[in-house]
Each structure stands twice: as C-alpha cells, then as structure tokens.
Length: 125
Image (cartoon, rainbow, N blue to C red; front, side, top):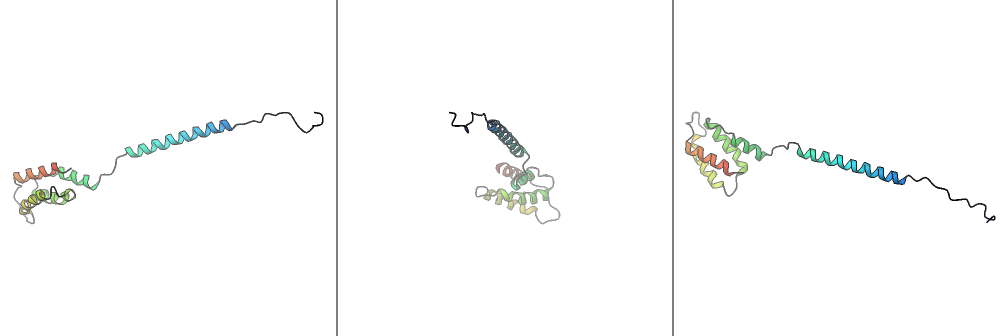
C-alpha cells in the first residue's frame, strides 16, 4: 500500500440538501396556503348585481300609489324576464296598462291590474 501515496482517507462532505429540501417544501406550502386564502377571500366579497337582479329588485320595490311610475317601471324592467311562457300574460297586462300611458292626468291603478302585476312579478325568477 505504500506505493499508493496519492489516495487519501474518506472525508465527510457537509451536505445540507435535506435542509434545503425541507425549507423549499415549507415555503411552497406557505405560498399555497396564502394563495388559497386570497382566492377564497376574493370569492366571498360581494359580487356585483347582474342587470336581471337589478331589474327584479326594482320590480319588487314598485310604489303602487304612483300610477305612471308603476306603468313605465313595469314595462321597462320586465323586458329582461320575458320568454315564451310568460309573453302572452305580459301582453295582456300591457294592453290593460296602455290606458294609463301618454296622458298627463291618469286615474289610480285598478286593483285587478295591480294584482296581475304582482302575480307576474312573483312568477318571474
């Protein structure tokens, strides 16, 4: 063995790759938790109301004491909800409401028409 002078004994090499791997895993988990929290928090924030939701809110808050406001608000806001099922019922109501349109002084709203409008508003969803 004396002939092999350039071979040295086994030396321990410091290896910190395990610590780096654990640190990297910890950082990644922390980032995922933060991103998940921010994403869920963003989804919980109040969403903007859609045009249909705004129209439905206006329809439900109609003041039936002002006849002209009832007529024009109903005809304007109900357009978003019309479909094949309720088109005929809407046209029937619209024909009855035509008496109250385009006049300076209008009589108070008939109670039957008022009930039909309220029924129509309840049926649309």
